[in-house]
Length: 130
Image (cartoon, rainbow, N blue to C red):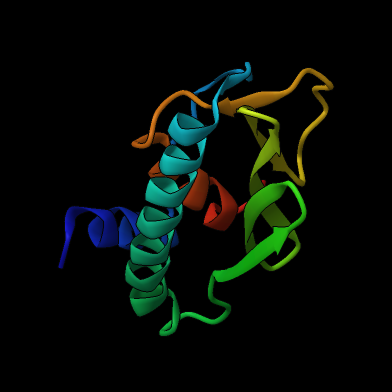
């Protein structure tokens, strides 16, 4: 089992998790922003596969849905009634990334503080609610 699979197993058995760290969204060069979106999307697929290998034994699994439309690349991770959407919106030669969760109350655009925070996103989706 991978370290992430162990973290999922611990969470399913009642363990703790940390919320993902975020940062303010800001415009970046188009190439840089789309490259990061694609790297994070690839990582999401790996993490969903690992999480679902554990979750299948316990019930619902994490879904990964891609979106591609005019001027945007996005994907949504969902688990039961919770979701997290990572979108990169493009305009001219710049782009801005934004993370939106079903629990968002913040109106300021936020994004992941780093690629490693995607693990925390997945864990926060599957964490039991009090």
